[in-house]
Amino acid sequence: MLYKRNKERTLTQSQIDKRFGLSLVLPAIVIVIIIAVFPLCYALFLSFFKYELATSIPKKFVGLNNYIRVFSDARFWNALKVTAIIVAGGIILQLAIGLIVALLLNKEFHGKKIVTAFLLIPSVIAPVVVGFIFRMMFNDRYGPINYFLSLLHISPVSWLSKPIPSYFAVMLANAWEWFPFMMLMLLAGLQSISKDQMEAAELDGCNDLQKFFYVTLPNLWNIILTVVLIRAIEDFKMFDLIWVLTAGGPGVATETLNIYTYKQGFNFFSIGYALALAVVQTVLTFFIVKTMYTRIKKKN
Image 1: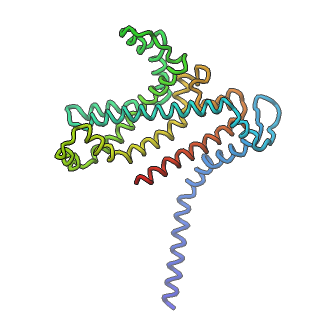
Image 2: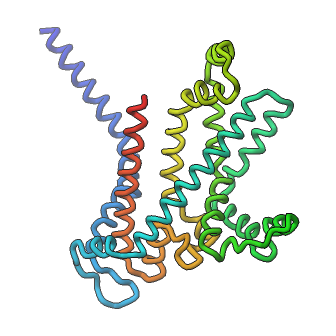
Image 3: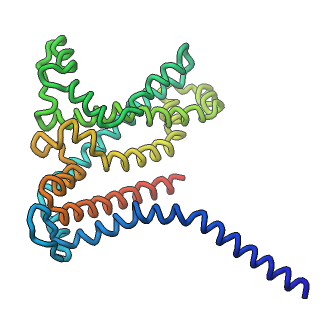
């Protein structure tokens, strides 16, 4: 009888603890629902309506018409292509620069800590500021980049007024801002590699290039996949830097999905179609992240 009463008391205390824990978490859950889940659900709901703020016509349910329009819109496919080019090119540049700098910083030299701290500065600057900095640097007539090219007797480049140079301008600005993140993560990976492996490779007669490909790179592979995944997510939703630097121009040369969605919503006030574009982009991002994450899990 006494055992049964103690058991009931234990269960009652356990229930009290669960309710107390839920009461602590509940405010955070409510806040997440208000600022994240509700806007997402409401955006999905409005994406099935023809909702034009520029007219006095009330919103009208059109079903999947907005989504059909998305996939038949040539400008959407152009924006998707531009997004893929800028994301892929930017990540390659960030990874290449970050890896080279990390390999250099992995060696001991005087003032290493100061140099490392100095190299981290770009990553703490707001993307809008970075956009303004590179907009001045890439200026056709007064920019320092064209000035240095003229010293080498190279004709000035119209960085922001021609399609192909504008691609490079966006990718270089983005790479400059975020290569420190790659550098820091890869440097941590390099410092975790066992010295025994390097010594064994030297005893086998491997040169520096062979040590890099057969020892360093395999040990860094999981870190590389992880940082590429993180940067792909961030670059896929990049907006402010491109908007300040080119605003999607010249023409639609650097118009990514984010820029196109923004223009549909805030320039043309086509809210229903803009939200359909946003939903499609969200789904695409989800599948890209899921695919990359699955590959990382397989590698592990």
